[in-house]
Length: 341
Image 1: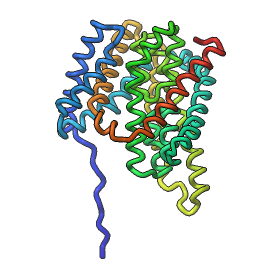
Image 2: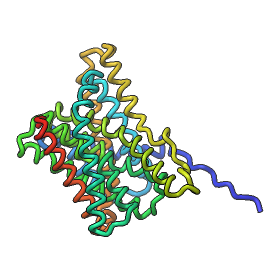
Image 3: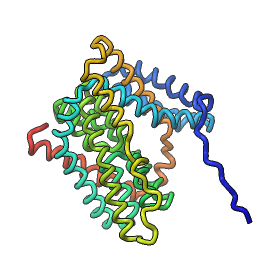
């Protein structure tokens, strides 16, 4: 009997993406206007909140899904690259090195908290690792990167992503308020957000909701942290191969997990450092990056199914809450010790 060849799925066309993109842009324009009226909240927060409200009331149909998914991932990466044009390589390197000690501590705390709390809550190993990696590195992107290595049950992946996403939403709304209550400096808040919030989009939203300087700093810290997914994946691949020698590492691919948009962010920063971007263009580039961020966050809000998130069960949520709290507190404590608040 001849084997049946299943054709590889094709990427959606521009016309298929257009409805979802148009919806995200329209809501983002409203969020941008609201952000101007309430700068303490900011456009990014309004974008994600409005997206959630639309998703869980009107519930756009499947026609909008390709465009929403494209905006939530690709447009977000474009916004990060656009931010690179406003930052010199010296600033990126200095910030990355300054934040590295705090980043390494919070990552260690995340994995230890996931292991200890997961044992206490009787959460099985793969789900503990997924939530630990998601909290420690870069949210859903990190979970997606380690999935081909761990090969977890689909329900575990969904639980982990939903749990991480829930606390991303909480962080976007809560962190700027806490930062002002704690009287954190722009750099102190940027370091806190960059090391303690899971997903890049949420770090960017919280950072720029606090201030432009905090947003710039938080973005670099987060991108430095995101690159650590590579050694984490390599370590997990070695451990998995050691445990399951006959299966090996299977479809593990360094090329696939590498966050290429970070490389282009550095290229954009190099262009700025070389003086190839006229100073007069910098405000327009930052405004474009800010709007792209709002569009991406609106799309992420439009993807948030609150009912599905609530159905994940209380144990993964408690585990995610515990790990997230441990990382948030440890980040502040390390900054306090080294005098960076």
